[in-house]
Image (tube, rainbow, N blue to C red; front, top):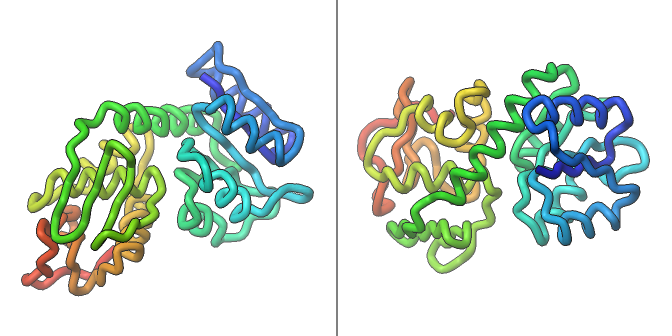
Length: 240
C-alpha cells in the first residue's frame, strides 16, 4: 500500500499518515519534494492513492489534476486548502478528482474514506468485462472508455463507475442507496456526492435532465439508464 501526498503541510501529512496506518500499518506514505518528482513518482511507482493539498508555492488544484489525468487514472483525492473556497470541492470533482477531504474530517472518517476509495478501485478491477452498447453509446470496462457516436467522452474513474453500473442495469431503477454502496461502500454517506456525479455525467453526455435521453431521475428513489437512448416518455422529476 503506497500513498503519495503532494503539496500538503507537515500537519496534513501526519494526519494522513496516521489515518492510513490505522487500517494499513505497513503502508508507505511518500512526500515528493517538487512538482516534477510528483509526476515522475506517479508514473514510475504507480501509488494506490494520490492526495494533493493546494496552497502557496504549489500548483493550482486545476493544474495538478490536469497534469496527473493527462497520463494516469490513479485514484486522486483533494484535501481542502488552508484558505478554502466554497466552490473548491465542486471544481475538484468536475476537473477529475475522485474525492475531496475537508480539514475538519476526523482520523476515523479519513480512514473510512480511504477504505471506500480503494474498495471501489478493487471492485472495478473485478468487473466482468462486458461492454455495454446502447443507442450510439459505448461503455467499455476493459479500457474505462466511453464513446458516443464514435467520439470519446472523457470521464473520470468515478464517473465511469457510476455510468457503467447504471448501464449494466439498463431499464431497471437503481436506488440511491444501491448505487452509493456499489461505488463508495457502506462507510461514507455519499448521497450528495452521487448527485454531483450524476450532474457531471449528464453534462458530458449532453443529457437534458428535464427530457433525459440517457439517465432519468426517479423521484425519491434513484436513477434509470434508458437503454437504447430513446427519450423518457413519462414525466420526470426535476433532476438532481
